[in-house]
Every structure is written in C-alpha cells, then in structure tokens.
Image (cartoon, rainbow, N blue to C red; front, side, top):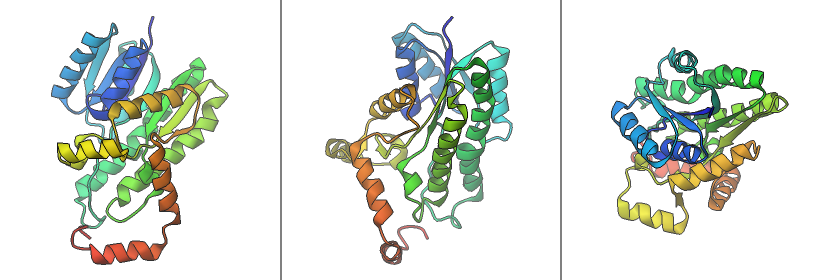
Length: 261
C-alpha cells in the first residue's frame, strides 16, 4: 500500500508544486488548506495527472486545535503519513506596531505554533516506524530580520532552527528533516505585474514554484538539513550578514513613509 504525503497549503503555489512532485513519485496526497475551492480543483488536477489517491481537508491552520484536527483526520481515515510538508504561510508587509493584531497572531500561529505541533505529532509516529520525512518551509528572510518583515523573518528563522534541531534528534531513527529556504518565488504573493515577474525570472532573482519544490524534495530525500534553492540567494544571504546597521538606519530614515513604519 502506498503511503501518504501531507502538504499544508498544498492547493496552490509552492505547496501545489510539492504535492505534484510527490505524486509523480507515487505518493498518495493529502492537501490541507483553508480554501475549499482551491482544494477541490487542485485535488482533481493531481488525480488527473497522476495515478494516486488524493484527498483534502479544508482547515484554518491558524486555530489552536488545527494541528490536532489534521492528525486526527489522518488517524481516523487510516492515512499513514510518510512525508510531512509544513508549507502553509502568509505575508504582510508592515512594521510590527502597525500590523493588525489579528494578522500578527495568525502569522505566529501559522508559522510557529501549528508547524511545531505537526512536527511533534507526525514526527513521533515516524520515529516509531523508523522512517519518515519532514520538510518545513523557511525562507532566506531567516537571515534577513529587517524592518517591515519582523514577524515573518523571525518566524522563518524559528522554522529553520527548529528543523535543524529535530534533524539531529530524529536522524538516528531514520527520519529525515529539512528546512527549505527559498528567496523570491514566482507567485501572487508580491502583487507584481506579469511583465516584472517574467523579468525577475529571466534575471534569476525569482524562481518558479516547480524549481523550488524540486530542489526542496531532492534535498529532503538526500538527507540534507537545509536547502537554499537558487545560487543567487546565497549572495543575498552573504550581503545580509555583512550589511552594517547604519545602512539599515539610512534606508529606514529615507523611506519611512513608504515602508509603513
């Protein structure tokens, strides 16, 4: 019997690319997201393209109970999750104090609380079976905790560090853990024009969802603890590390109004 791969946020963007990549490898797919319409269409599309079973759970993952509900859903239906991908995320461009409190809370719950519990619940099952894969969606922002992305960057840093820690905790039990840290990805997240997105892809500044998913899955199955898709992103990380604070202060001072500070 084929085992299942569970992907949060799997109905669109990088999550859908992860689901498609894993379906192409013969995994049955469980899509979890809060969009019923996208869950339906993505499920049908993967079923059409691959000879695997695909099910979905429409769930708001910013709720305190959501990780337990996802785990119970799999348990009650007999879905043995061999691959867990915590991909669901959200982005809001604003300073911390100007960010709506509900967005603040939801980002923290979605990027920190729920993935932690999912790793714990499903990771424990994998440890018992002595086999499994956990991929957490981090970002190069984990190295770039700059103004207007304060919570986003901090939460992605958390996911990177959490993944690194449990990579060592579960390695001897046959469970592989990887944090995937992409830079800009060609999705609707940034509200860019199609022309600009095309140019960014051409220049290598932005990568496709399929590119990120393919690199991430390969790194996970190869037993890597971390993956940064796209060589240019290593340059961005290096520049972020060496940028002095006074440069950030100058940028904030000059663009204060535009940055919603």
